[in-house]
Image (tube, each protein chain N blue to C red):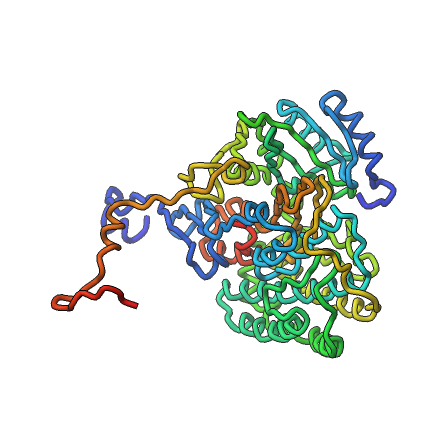
Length: 378
Length: 182
């Protein structure tokens, strides 16, 4: 019997502990965008969570049906704004496969270089935001400081910092500018030591470990059952990376490891992302070495008409499998375009992961899953 | 399964699923290195269970569910993958457009829960036996299924009082009436 109960007696109305309903989001700094979580709380414990989506629903799939194939390319990198390049990649791959185009080798290397640079900055955000959710603001600022270097590189190539619109059906928009290679190599030279710095600051931090070890465990079979892919699934030990398994683009030529976790907790997910950043840097270096001459696109006319049929192509984005399912009826516009986003599946697992934990742990778990609502709500 | 020899290729997967499904599959084809299995709506849960639990095909991972409106009929597509081999499998279910209904597979793959809600939201496909079939991305009181080809854009209703209030120009007491403020 607690002291207040002794004072006031057990029948006092204050002890009718009711479940409290609390709205977390859509405007909440730790929900990474406009995710709304309806929490049912017992004190500080989470009884159940109900994610509410759709605050960022822009009708991407419907808009595709009213645009030509090239017009839509300008939109699609707005989908998941942190890894826009992969959205474009997945889309052009499906259109290219539909039209049976052979992309020039140099374009493929450029795609890999830009793609992996984009993976690095996306993981920077995942790393920084996750620690911000846990209450550490230094890593967040460090991540943003180091992102600037990559942004400069991307701006140099594509002209934009975030919404690249650099891919074209059958290649890329233009060639790499002069001096890109040197600057990129200079960045890669300094990059591993920066990752070491992050690790020195965070990985063995006592508070960080006690907040993340054994928290939000995803078992391997659960990860598959819920359709979770990417680093979230690999942290659980699911050895599955589309870059290696389907070997799209020129990835089979490169030598890289697929980092795996053991326990599938928040710490393993963090660690997997950190390791992937290192691997991405290695891939870029190999791609720069292998970069060959030649054209960078196929000079496809702007009005393309892929033959009738359907096709599904997926790429490994920083968050997992992003796929585009395209149905064409032989016309100027897609008949149906479905976008399969990895975060959609990851969010569907939040209720299962967080029930029974404290609110502060919910924030840690949501941060470790690296949620971006742009792709979920479409 | 680590041994490379145990990996299936597409024709082997086709043979295997032919043995496994028998008459349940209306049609089995390989298109674009995917194995496409066409089934009737009623047979879907049985086919899904067999594909998931078979030790060779072992489709433990449901990538997504896709609704397509072909004007004359509707289609629900289930994209499956296995971590043990690299042949993606599609289950294709052809639905009646007037009354699109198909049994839910949410109890076979947990991932199906939200993907079915999405297909219901966009196409109005009713997944029978789904635990919680509600709209997921559009508004709860949205009056149409927006991805259907004959859906018309939602018209915004303006109530009377809004027009009255918005129509009057804001004027301080004693201020002369101005015809056009820029």
